[in-house]
Image (cartoon, rainbow, N blue to C red):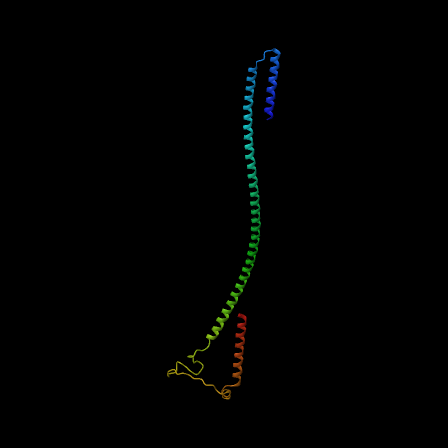
Length: 206
């Protein structure tokens, strides 16, 4: 608008100057003056139209720039929210990681304790099996029902078929009369020693 006003001012100034010049020369031509004014007016109208188009174009560009700026601002806000969410997730993962490490340490400690208990249990089981085998061997060393050695029986000289041997409980007085007293004493001592050996063996293996 300022450019248009300046142009109109220049046109009127030129027209007045031309009018004064013509009046001074006393050669005034109204038709020529009107033609010049019309031409100038048309030129100004065209220039004004071009300026309006430029203004409209610039306004459109400004509006588009403002829209892009708003979109960028929205995107920036969304990115900031996403960054905040990711940071919170990272903090949560770090916390979970720490808890997982603590749990692994606890499980390793429990595993080590379990291994020690297993080793001790295996040792106790081996000792128990050894003692059990020892006692089984002691029990298997006893005489069987068909073994009659030591009872006055000789299989090589006996021609009679084997007969069942029955034992009856003898009276204490009769046994003492048959066997000497020192025989009972020695037998009791041997049985006592055997019992003490078996007890100590079981105590060592349990």
